[in-house]
Image (tube, rainbow, N blue to C red):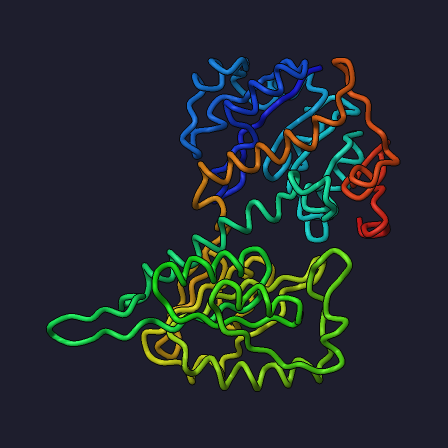
Length: 376
């Protein structure tokens, strides 16, 4: 069995899909591993570290993937490069399949079996494979650090001989994995934290971390969560009620961190321009959903925008800003996914298995995932 680890090509992507730790374990499973030269540079992993773990270094992408049965990547082969891999190769990556539809067609045409790791179901035996959780956890942490760096004041209360400094007030909008980590991090830094979400089940989680929960509670919130634990799109009436409540709350905040995403849909707008105008000068917004359209009206991917006295931070690919740790966790996610597919030193894929069925997007020259049918 041959496994390839490629060097990522997209801007702002510093992560790598393997670590020396996982290389050793994958080699023990029976894989012969090739890593593209420079693949780990952005995550501070030298080629020599991969070699010492048992991998071979290849000089370019073509030689890396040419004979590979399995390809590990963070964001996947670019569509034009799909033909460099052999037909039938299994690729594991974060593919953004609802948006990057043309690339799926390229994978199908090249005969790749492509797995979208973000489609791995949230079931107990797949927890160790959950890339959304592993990467969002780091994004929530980094968002608070980015906010602290941009905010012109201190986070904690400070009592000095010259007087007392009031603690920062931080609001987290969207209480998923990223939001919960943001709450915990902001509290550790000494801020007063509040949080909001459409799912009433998150109230207890917020309060357990020391935050204050803010939400509109009505009949609609009872069905605001999918079976997979994600937030659903809410009605226009509910959005109007929630917007009114948020507008009243956000005017009192120093920092807002928005994390709300809906799978397969544009990110919901949580902060309008009118709300921005009510915020205090020097306030900061960190929009973690900026690449999906943004939760804030004026956020721009890859930019820090100043409007109405407020800094709106729209860093791209926030997990990649902690590339070393993000790579380590992601590499383990991939290792845990592939390990059950190996039997007696050979790949043995059960396409009826729930994890495979939910995450496989292309096979046998076609786009096979039910949620993507007709999307090419």
